[in-house]
Amino acid sequence: MKNVIVVIGAGSIGQAISRRVSAGKHILLADVRQDNAEAAAKVLSEAGFEVSTATVDISSRESIHALVKLATSIGSIMGLIQAAGVSPSQASPSTILHVDLYGNAVILEEFGEVIASGGSGVVIASQSGHRLPALTPEQNKALATTPTDQLLSLDFLQPDYVKDSLHAYQLSKRGNSLRVMAEAVRWGKRGARINTISPGIIITPLAKDELSGPRGEGYRRMIDISAVGRAGTPDEVGNVGALLMGADGAFITGSDFLMDGGVTAAYWYGELAQA
Image (tube, rainbow, N blue to C red; front, side, top):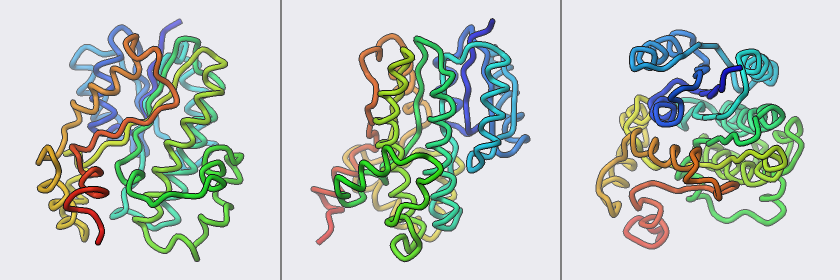
């Protein structure tokens, strides 16, 4: 039986992490678009990795379940890299909640049933989750533990409360880290670990869409004012992913790692702070 690393989302960040953790393992690379998956698989296979591809719609439990079935038919699932999602400039509030919040919760649930002992995973969230004002303890618990198929019925996720795509995105990404914390308990019973990375502005095609979109000026100001003064790279996220999924991160689970060059610090306590 092969050891399998499942990568959901064929973009730059998923590829960067998979390069660091997949030597000697089989990469199953899944994306909503088959051409994206095949293009990424070609790059990885030419770099010496064994790769197969699949399509997946993470807003659909049936599609995620089919991916799990395919992965387990290849071998033991030793790693999960969940890097799929949509951004505020790409989708409506409803779509963002379905993909980024519900879809992520289903992935954690479904793969949590089959992850192998000694396995590990990372979910790519966002700095945006750290800029959402504090939720109540009850709301935090609801995002973390509500049965997945009831998640989108929560009262504070309804259209009269979530009025724009950015708010939906912030709630989804806060929900990702809370969900991972709760799932770490269940994954731990299988001898596996799961963590979240919350990147800031990382130069990927998705980020370029944001930088040229209606919020682009604000994002460029974030970069300029941040302590580091630049955007990040997928390889830098890959470094953190490798730590969390590897032996050096064996004591880390249920945690969220904010890596944004200091943007969130500036937002709360620096020049980006709200008056």
